[in-house]
Image (cartoon, rainbow, N blue to C red; front, top):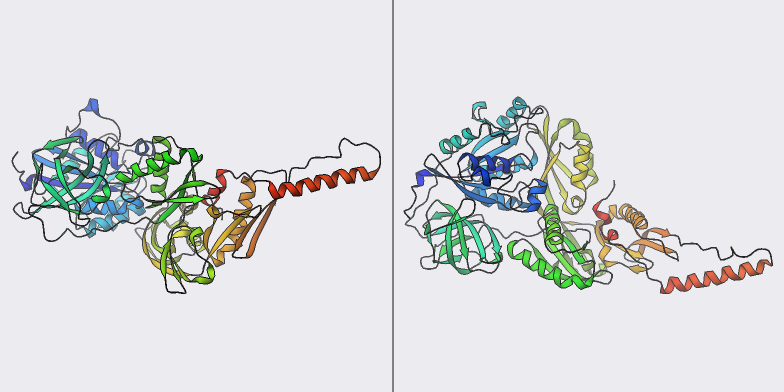
Length: 597
């Protein structure tokens, strides 16, 4: 197969906030170019997971090659959520242009801004597209002004489409060909290809999605990843239409796939550079970084009999998801399980749902936390991912926690309550700017741990659903942090321990003990629930015992008979309290996920 003329190739991606119609627009482009026959068409064709279809979000990005008027158009449908922003940035680096899709009824949202900044940093040609113009709530003029204010473009540059009905989609294809530049690169230079996604196939090994920047990759070539130093063989190369379509080679400027003999995506990470062993490139492509998880939670099977199934399931998922990190964890109450690291709460929710659905597991998940950098008085430094790992407080010199740079986009009428919410979470407001007369952007800093539970839910309820939120990790700061332990019937529950700022510890301790009182069932004896910092208790709730009237069968007679029976009952309850075991339901371990202010 001859090499394709670079001037006839266009590489572009679609960026948008969640639920602005990105995947639907991709469907219409596939139909319009005849890439998919109408009889094989289905909604969200590039979203292959059931979870993606049900939630209407893109979790795994998907590339596809379309042919239109003699041009080869390579489209990448990227995820829209903040958790996957690194993958989005690598996808943008594989392209020369981007379609910025904005919902005409909702306007610019936080992730729209974040992705526009990424696209500008990658020096892409941005084509603004207003979607859902057929909706009664669509306000084309207002949203057009927002887009013009953001991009500095002209009104006639903005394309008006309805991805659902197909209106205006042909103009999008023409704009891609006219406005987006063709790729640059030299086919006679040593091969460099950017990995913008990779996944593990049970039957074929690791499959890489790549953009060839220089040189070419032939079937059967020996390849090397420049950052991880892994070596492998390109067993098959080709394009995606959207199924794998084998070819003899991938030439300069093209986007396609490589089937390798690698066993895990950890050997070929997103952002790495592929080169040939026979003629390796001297330098790798810029922008690669090792993605680290920031949110950690304990995953335990409801029965210890299912531990092996959970272990196999997590290992299998981690083959495809190199950001997923896990280590065994043991709890006296919950038994054997794993502490798993995630990119964010959505990532955690997706992994949880996949484990439950695909592997039929019933899971208990402990409250999510972040990682803390601890320095001891001896000078030793290490990282803890769970409050229960914190050593004796007398040996700790300082504890650092991660802080984020956050950005909230919201109608200006809601500014007051949202600023109050930021202050409640120990946040520092940095700046307020305005996209237009109605839309405000708040820039702030806050500790990540305080945003992990229900910050996003609170933001949505305070702004009637109009507020949107985006963040990235800024740095680690030393704070006055304490470990709050919870005791049930005098027994310390390590799985419930949390790290808090000292100023918040009493209020949160009282709140959590009150919630635990609601979820832990009553026993035949009185159960105390306590929160403590070190040897000092800061909150307490008591669950009263079931009361059996042992004197009910008596009538008349001497009062000493009653006293004797009540004394015997009291003695029995004392004994039961010593030997009795409190049954703790799984909801007790997730009380922090819904924290009320």
